[in-house]
Amino acid sequence: MTPTPSRKTPVTAIKPRIDKPIVLVGLMGVGKSTIGRRLASRLGLPFVDSDDEIEAAAGMTVGELFENYGEDYFRDGERRVIARLMDGSTKVIATGGGAFVNEDTRALILKDAIAIWLDADIEILAERVSRRDTRPLVRDTDPKMVLGELAAKRNRFYSQAPIHVQSDEGAHEDTVDRIIEALAQ
Ligand code: S3P
Image (tube, rainbow, N blue to C red; front, top):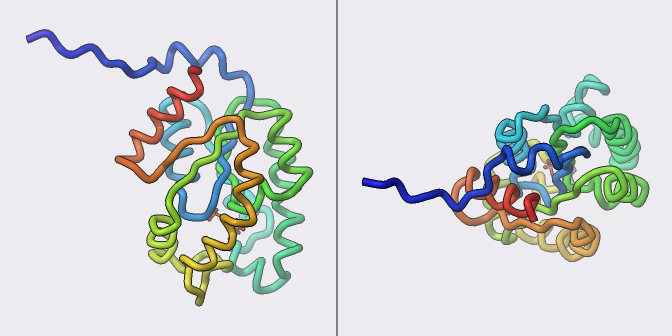
């Protein structure tokens, strides 16, 4: 039996055209780290998570940073860490949900990277963030309400990313396929 030809864009076709970091932006729970890691592995690029980098630099978790020093301090560290990660080398960077709201960070990413807005329904995000207690903005809250408010404030920023991909349908690998298709356009 002849195998059905794949309609997927081969990675080899787009890899040479990727000459900037790929930066994933979007709300908490949308899968920036999980999808980012898989995308990086498919493209044969390094992966870095800005929250992990902030935690390593501070020697503290994001939760502890918020608790001990407050959100503004965290945001300042976030801005500096992302500026450092944007060193011109090709890689996949997953950002924390608030990073792209910062004007300087957003301008830098839009100028020097390929920004991808990963998006999903609020119900799905709320369900995903409820599984872990590591995110200070939704801890002890109604996550659906908080995420709805954050979406209302932030979607106008996320929508400035030139690529917009839904991450709520199918398996993670399907989302990675959609990103690769979008990069090929
Ligand atoms: C935040 C999102 C978190 C983390 C911090 C603040 C936000 O990252 O940076 O808790 O403001 O949306 P994730 O989007 O990876 O959960």
